[in-house]
Length: 150
Image (tube, rainbow, N blue to C red):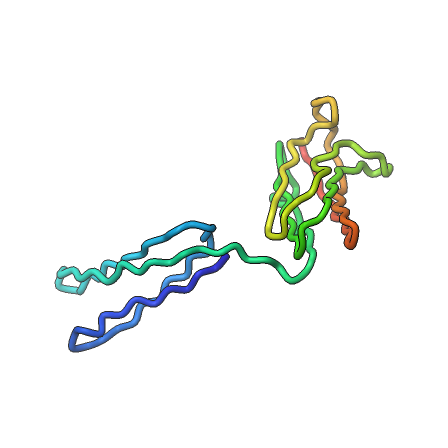
C-alpha cells in the first residue's frame, strides 16, 4: 500500500509543506516525523502524524513477472487477488510437466507472493533452464516464463 503524508510548518514566517510517500505500509499504526535542517544548522521538527494502515484490495487478478529473473538460487512470485478464492501455483518445466506445487489452498483477497527455491517436489535442485510459473483460480489463469541459472 502507498501512503502519502503531508506535514506542514504553518507557524513559521515561510510556511512549507513536506510530503512523504511510504510504499511499504501494512495494517498497523505508523507515526511520522520530519526533521528540517537549515543552511545555518538549526533544526525544526514537524509531526508526528499518525497514520493507520489499511489492507488494499486489488480490483483485478494478476500474476507479476518473477523477480529476480534469471535467478539463482530462488525467486519471488507476486500475485494479487480481488476476492478470496482457492489458488494453485505450480512450477512447470519446458516439457509441460509439473516440477513443484508451491500453493494449493484458499487465499484472502489482497497482494501476496510465493517463493520458489529451485527445487522439485522431493527437495532436489532442478537443472538450469526455462521454467514456467502458473497461477490458477476458479476465475483466472496466467503463466509466466522464468529462467533458472546455476
